[in-house]
Image 1 (cartoon, one colour):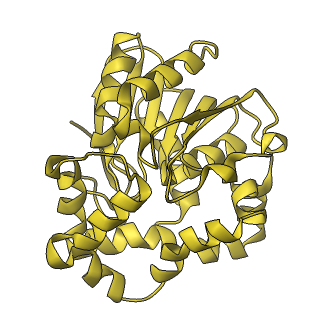
Image 2 (cartoon, rainbow, N blue to C red; image 1 turned 135 degrees about the vertical axis):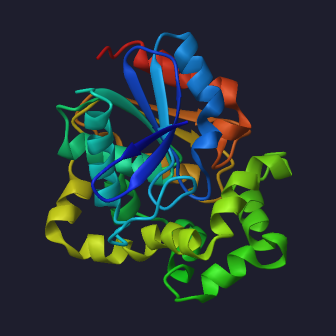
Length: 284
């Protein structure tokens, strides 16, 4: 495992292979370990796959300034690329990692070759036209704004709340205890649990700033493939329709049947095929 010290935090990274860089960015509740099958496939195909544990997620460090805004996560990615000695990279992002990929593509189009965004539509589509059903699904975001209570509930009763969340988001995923062990290890630490929830708690402030709002609204100027799960209980597949206008470059939408929110873990071979098939057409 590689450790990279950035200005505000130290990131731990899994890596495989050599060649063009592909950064794989996890979301909530997940860690970089969820991308191990993809990293192996990337290495076999001649890529350098690097999956950082995002700031606040073990074994990466806590932010020195307690800053977990999604725009800061994007700054981490660019600084990580610099530390790795790479000018341009592809991005594969799931959940929060997908949001970071969208923003990175808008803010730094000269640094990003192409992105694969999993489980999250373009932010403009999500923020401006949520369905009533989606607002209900997203109620957990409002719950996470409460102080202290979510932290206590997440780790209570052997992480029963976390298991219910994962089952509701990916109802067909026959995960094992080992699959969630790294997530539970991070969330069991009070400071790291607060950091994971700080991603959500910082979101209202990000949305209030005009400069950040404009980043979320702009059409993506780099090629993108968006992957959704037909059974996603977190962000429904209907939220991925009618969003082609949000992409100013090449755009593909793929729906994986029988998969939910964690499609990269439920169907890792299919997911890797989709990623590799897209990246082959967009050389760095």
